[in-house]
Length: 374
Picture: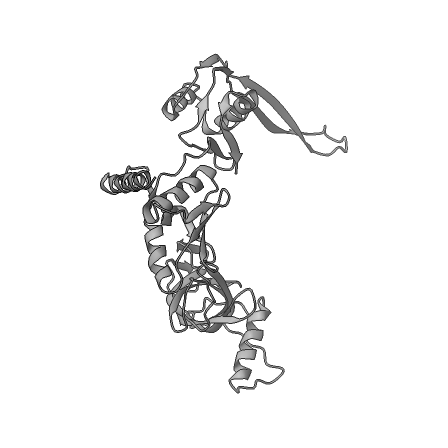
């Protein structure tokens, strides 16, 4: 019995050595790219502020009263009192929304990038400076303070009725423009376990990921198990050793399972994208174009002299219907993506026509794929 156990351990050691020595196939991916650790996530921040220093391209205060209210409130906090009947007519200030993403494990004192977007009728934020703006989370707490000079990637000029603009002028960015003031508690696992969550739910990939962790880090005992098609529970050491353990786990290589056959159709742009699992069954397609042309000419009906009639317009419409001859095309069964593309190209249909053909093929059962319209 002891000899049998010893032979099993030797066999597992040899198998693990072969996996390490054997070069990884092109289809293998790191666990870091396939899954994330439960609880390690980003948080969105939002704030309302003012951008000053614009070159007469700010909000028109008569149409954006919230900008004037913000300026008066800011001046009041600074000890500047304005008469009650004062009407501000400013052109170099704009009200903006400030957004940022707080990364996991961010600590007070670190800086993050912010995006500044105009919410009024400012023509441009180019050359402006964001005044100190608190950024709050979903719980209403302030997690960062932002301030700095805006970087706008667009440029524009206008004179009279002529206007030239390149890129967008109403949105700017401040690299490192916010300082973290409060840390978000991030729990790296619960108790003796950490949970890995797949980016795309797949039972086969979850099983392979758990097997790869067990084989590489603990050949003798099972430390990873797939809970469902998305979550893999892994027993991990506690304390500072957990960070090194997670580093080993996320750099392991796994062959993910091939996804299901899917065709993505964008009805707005006419784009069609399909993956390598799409196949076709034998089918016949008749495709033709129907064109309807309506022309309307306006004629003038002139009354006879001294008839006290009125001149009226009489529209005359002509309708012309043209139908192209649609031949019957036989599509053979395709077992690869290249054969499917070749078969669809033989129809000679435009991308817009292809949308209707794919839907009809799916209804007829000839398209072996999930059809998703976005």
